[in-house]
Each structure stands twice: as C-alpha cells, then as structure tokens.
Amino acid sequence: MKFKMVHENYNVVDLEKSLEFYEKALGLKEIRRKTDEEGSYIIVYIGNEQADFELELTWLKEKEGPYNLGDEEFHLAFEADDFEAAHKLHEEMGCICFENHDMGIYFINDPDGYWLEILPAK
Image (tube, helix red, strand yellow):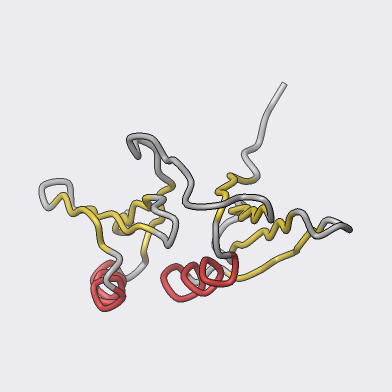
C-alpha cells in the first residue's frame, strides 16, 4: 500500500488577504474552489507548477476572531530557487518572523500566523 501527500489545510480569517499573501510571497495561485451553497464555507486550493502538493485555504463564515495556533510548532516548508531574492522580498513584505543563520533558513508568517519555512535550493 502506498500513500501520496496531496494537500494540507489552513483555516483563514480573511480569504482574499491570504490569497494575495500566498501569491506575492510564494507564487501560489488558485487552482480550484469549492463554495457551500448556503455560503457557510469557501475552500480554495492553491499551488504552483513546482509540485503537485497543494495548500487548502478554508474560510468559515461563522468563525469569529483569529485561530488558536497553539505553540506554532508546525510549519510548511518551501525551497527557494533564489534564496537571496526570496529573503529580500519577504523582508520588504515584513513577514519574516524568525531566522536561523546557523542552519541557513528563515520563517515567514502568513496573515493568520501560520509559519512557513524558507529553504535554499539543494
């Protein structure tokens, strides 16, 4: 039996703000969208040509306030083909939340506080 990872879900408070962030910061674009007939939720899958893996952004109409992300001990990692240019962009966006110079990586956070690891190309 084999399993293939296909997507990870992040719940978001402001879907449009999140879509704009992910496109600008990581080049992820909307692939498809599911909307509840009553309008209680919208699910948007985003990704790019570099991988089949998708990020699922879920907006819930009834959700009030920010999501509790616990101790932020989880993250999604992205490999940057131009690490220095990526760092410059994220610095300009003001979204770098942690840098580990010894490991040569850094983290950005999205509008909802999810951490995203940025790695140099191998």
